[in-house]
Figure 1 (cartoon, rainbow, N blue to C red):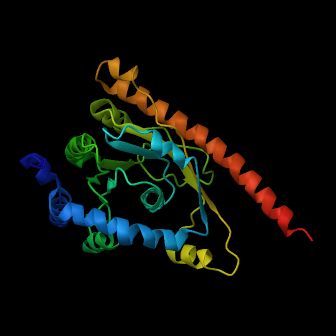
Figure 2: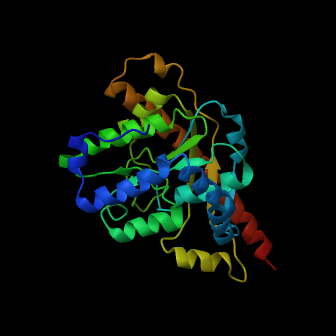
Figure 3: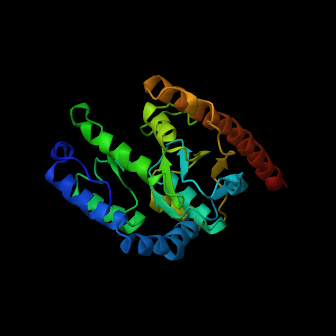
Length: 283
């Protein structure tokens, strides 16, 4: 039986949020509908994303995904620059591997759950996979306890993958390499579920998805997004510590350090690639 919110947690949600969540929750917790949605991601959703981005996105180190334990869930920990960072990574993983294909992407409740149009966008572009919602307002954060419990439970399933942004919010700063501090929620998920933890850094997507597709299919497209994946992280020592906020923050800091190292690697890859492009452009 799927994990359900308490009556107090339900009351935190607005009517539209409650309706939108009931729809996505019913889809994602159904033993009949969820496998169908995953299959649609494999045969339709993922290939569509790949078609739209194949010429402007390069992956590096994705062979590290083969090193994960197939008997544990997977937690992708990724820096956050745009709303389609996770979808691009997921689509590439679907193309390269046949494991951990049940993917869930927690998302802010704003728009995606407090607006009827948000539900439509979620269903059309992520097949309901933008789930569960996370609420930003402090007075309503009782809901996030349920969302955390739900993600922790999802990660105990070996076939599941959760795409998570440990920074907790989208980094809107001008420098994509200046990462925000990690939030304790990431560390709590790792401590409670002990999943495979796979770090990824990427940057380069433009804000408009329409311009992105246009650039991908221009007469002379060039890669502008480099997705760099690191090796699975080991938290065996941290899992021996007491279960408290201090431990969660310690784990999150370790996660952010790994992502920061990937950011430095991405910068070197980008500089080397752009240097080669300039060389080929010389007469």
